[in-house]
Length: 206
Picture 1 (tube, rainbow, N blue to C red):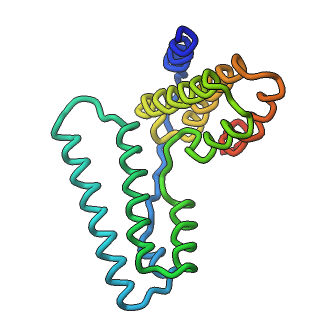
Picture 2 (cartoon, rainbow, N blue to C red; picture 1 turned 90 degrees about the vertical axis):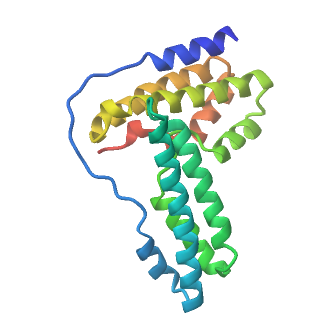
Picture 3 (tube, helix red, strand yellow; picture 1 turned 135 degrees about the vertical axis):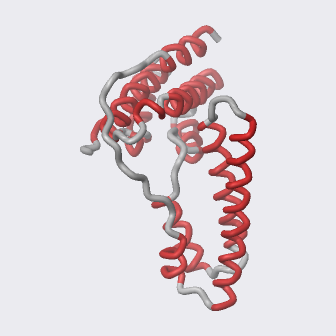
């Protein structure tokens, strides 16, 4: 328990100061997606209905959060967004054929905003491939959750500045990896680093 508390504290207190450089963020272009799917007239109407439903749900959730006041919880907001996207995909699957659904999923995977963390598939693979003990798995979850919270909490500082955002990501990621190194064997840690390479932004040139 002390080790988990230390991990949470170590990640949360990291900070970097830097100037800002504003850049826009592009959302999901559903009209482009519809064109890629080559929908029939009936499918197009169904697509629009599902999209309108989840757009309304998202707007209502944002309005409710704003009405409650207080600091915006980005971690919780991204969790809800991820869940909405999953539910939307399930409803789209009811009328899209196999090829269209594959195109839809690939488009969403490429363009949808993602939670800044190891995703569920990666976590499951780490636990299985490394045969983690319960303690090791708990540290993995704690370090990953702490990383996500710290990165999201720093959003107002790095927002609009890709280089600064990358610096924050790398610093918090170093703490996440340090936490895992403290509970993994040398062989396990080497495997771990291979599995999380897709999340390593230190190699990205902005």
